[in-house]
View: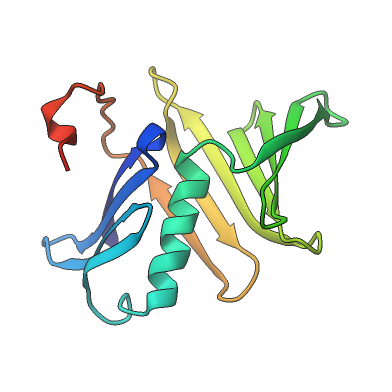
Length: 162
């Protein structure tokens, strides 16, 4: 088991992610702000592909969909869905659902499912208490995130000076 700390600032397109042991040993520390910078990484987290993929996954989970809105509609069960397509040809369907709050299905340029995100149960502020990501293409893996603490920071908060 590891702990992850994620700071996301969508307007500035900034992500800072730290993965550490329960004892506090840092396994992975990276920042994305127009450019990916790995501050620290130990095996097996030191693979450059891991850093790129994990940051892309965090961006998928916590940032607005990339690309432009190309379609909207409803599923057979009546839940709304919005479809986005980015400049790389990736398509993301954002779905609302009573059972898990919301979901994202992302497809590659060939239309194959590449990643899925599911957000379950929300706290009083509307923040999901559990998020699960599944990567369906190489390298295949999954992330299970459980909310321990969340704090919304305003843009003038001095803690955002990074």
